[in-house]
Amino acid sequence: MPESMPSAFVLQWTLEVAAETGVHAARHDSVVVHPFAAELSFELQPSQLYPVAAQYERARAVDTTMPLADRLEAAQAAYRSDAVELALGYRSTVKLGEHTRRAMVDDVWAMTLARASGQRPPARGSCCFIYVLPGVHECSGCPRVVG
Image (cartoon, rainbow, N blue to C red; front, side, top):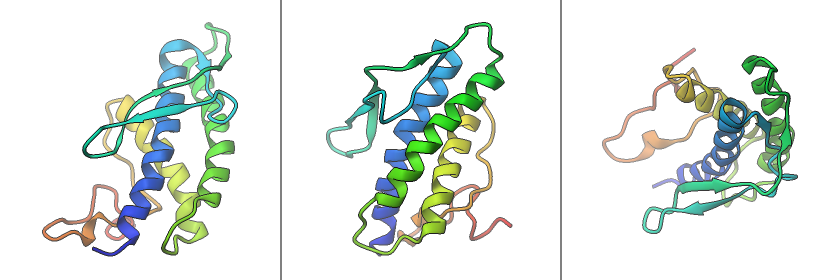
């Protein structure tokens, strides 16, 4: 298996923890989670090692009368500021270009928001490279087939 796939998955999963926490906190708790400032942490599934639970120590409360769209916009801005820094600083054993890293930040937020809203996955700007596994094809929204 090419090393690009697990390297992309680790970055994607890490970003997904922050995105999931941000989306759900804004939708259900009326708070904005700034991943670094909130001391966001997560727990891994024991045998498959993907994130299964996240928690944060601190979040910024927002006005509960603020429309959901505004809460989500504030949450996305908080997520994006930390997620871009994390993605660009992510140490990978293979080359993951700046475009892929930045696109993955936005893709993960969009996928998380779509999932939380019961919508289909959006088209992506980054590739998770899952298609490199034997017998597996491109994921929904893959930039290799969409566009």
